[in-house]
Length: 389
Image (cartoon, rainbow, N blue to C red):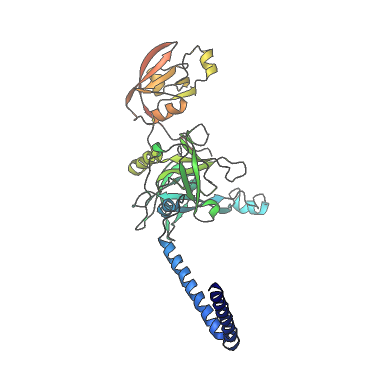
């Protein structure tokens, strides 16, 4: 029985192969048509797969939403100013001196610089760095959507390196302000700006440190440090969190070659809010001042002066006839409290005094020769230092 079935199977295969040989020899187009039909089916299946991929969720680890949400609010800023190019080449020519004397016309040139900024209100207010627009005669803002506009300076605060501009355009994409006080080391951040003038660019990194001060860049320093790549042209651009909310304004980098070395500094949004509100409402930032020269208390200094604590700040000098002088503060005093707030160090003291309203009387707690005393200081107004010529 099995032998008969095997013989039947072998005959069937032999007949099938013979028929295949005859068809391929006499009608090869039948075979090609069948093959192409199978290819079309495969291509159609591939197209369906490609179309369905559009509905797939964003890949894990992507920050596309944060970038797309914040990028329209970041602008490029171009500024220019007239500069005297120096003495005229014919300054010492006797013939020209006869007609012009020493008042020969001087050559004038225009210098241009670029940076970034962030739209912070639908009314067209833009926050940027003071050094981006310092001394500029003309300021042009280019939006991510291709529009451009001339910008007016609302006000500046050189001591925090911030400036507020305003443009007159409709439907402006204002960024959402975040909470830098909730940010911490290790949080992922994106830096958005126009580095080297190549166009809007997004880089990613983490917060490397909070509250960086004594960097020597500004008078009032409280930087967010990040390793997100920040380069020339990023100044004034946005540092945002993973939700696209503004955490800070990129302000400076530590660099030995002009490029990013992984240490960038951003002004936190908490500082930006207070500065911006005062500039918009008052036209300037008003800060308290008492007229002292403070120094941090080092362990060596504490041992030398037999001081049991290193918190606070030692008063190294007092401005004659200033508010602190008139209240009886003396060099060598250790300032421990302003009102009810303890003072941690020199930087903390500057910030605490800056927040005080001029003409108000505030108690300052001191240690003098080991004894605790309190003096009442009538706070003065801090004058903005004039730039050196």
